[in-house]
Image 1 (cartoon, rainbow, N blue to C red):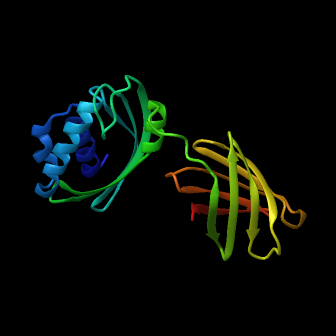
Image 2: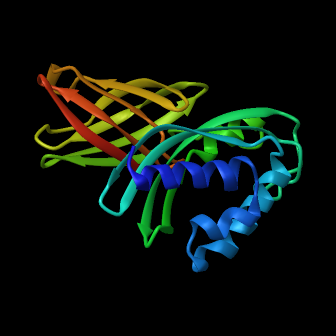
Length: 216
């Protein structure tokens, strides 16, 4: 374990898991301290038992990247939402930049939708609408309608003329779609990263292409 990853792990444990606002200055630069202190206060008010567990962590130079799992019980007002008393588990990832032995920048990507779905304060994102994705010179345009968990619609793909029927399911966060352009099987499998973005893999003609489809 590097000194950088050790600092990040200890900082997470003392400031977020223990809710010790007095330890913030020990791990974070001055320009982050007020914002982080307020965030900790709001998080602990909404989720008194909030706990973060680092799943994977790696450092490179002055950057530390880690993924985590958060758990907590919604017992207080949080982001304007009245307490539900429900427990939730969700994930996220962070890129932390360090300088002179302190964390000076945080880039956080957290699955708030998964958390709020478990609390019952948000509806599952629907696939209804137009979605577009690009990969290796291929453009995929989907016009979809969702009923229940079932998804239907049509797709146009670069190199194929016309529109082709699409069927699939949205079992949030997992999405699975299939079509047969010109009789050739094509599938897309991905997971929501936000209400309007689904990164995944397009498989067609024996090739697996990374594609993120975005709602237009």
